[in-house]
Length: 444
Image (tube, rainbow, N blue to C red; front, side, top):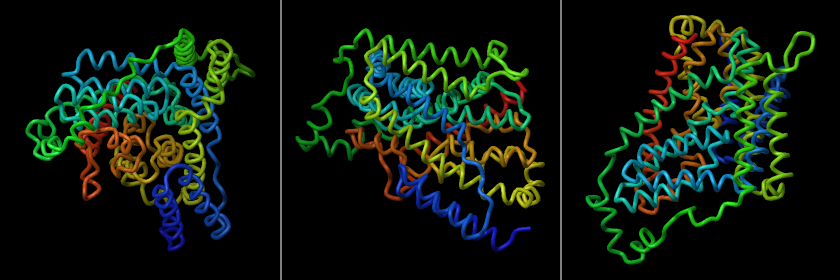
């Protein structure tokens, strides 16, 4: 039975998330701490468990990716992507999201694509394609790739929590569902974006800007490229070390019998990922001239540490509330979940709109979903729905994409929600979730 105290405490949780999202960055986790303090000290709720396993994995993964970036390896990956895009500029609306998607899959964070975004815009402009078309869906793709990366917190947390709740699944099995599903969603979004908006030569606002010599020079006078950078041999070696580390992780996940075991229990995958990632980072430092100080100052490592604080505060706050009212939640939601188990996707999506972190959504909401009796294959099928923070365009990748588009066609609308990322985001998440649900039902 719902009580007034439950409603007030839920408002505190939602209020902390809402205020934190307004400030962004570290504030999301820190302000969640205020909500946690109110629940524990003000209402006497028993504190939940902070998601330490997921946090350790994020630290190890972003340290390795940050070291690779410091070695110059990320520049080489960007160059490879740019060469492909410039070779086929007429297909950029489809190729750009594929590039940003696979960069995120490799590195485990969507913050690696900022260097590529100006290049996507530049290629579109030079080809006469409305930049909003590839830029909007490419920004979406950079975040969709998180549920398809073997080292992303969302994937590892899903596997860890699922195993604890009786759904024995491995990282490769998750990727067997999430990667094809999300690729289908992205291609659907790209197809919908292919003729989106007016062509540049027919857009009166864009043509009016071109009449101003300063604006014309701003739009067409510069060229964004990474091809003029010389990539050192050590930078390429760092990429190979990183890829080898990913391969080792996937191999151990696929063949757990290869892992050492004690008392009949093999080494847990969360520890495998940490050991392999940290070791790979060390090899890059020793053999690839990667500078740790440069890594710490880089965007990959910094964004990863921000994610650590956000997940730490958000997941702890959510676990504290839901663990104290688990019985009440079961009574309230049992009938709905029993009849429509897929409806948990709507909950995942709405929570993601608030907290801007797919990993945090999984850590905070997946235990509740299992406790409600939802089957593991169903939850795997709705995994793409944990990405909803494009809905309110305040995420760094979306804001950066708007700034990178010199044509001014990629926009945050006057009414906030009529922005360039809404249509491709909704199409991608809706399609990906349906395909993932079908695939999971067939496989499991």
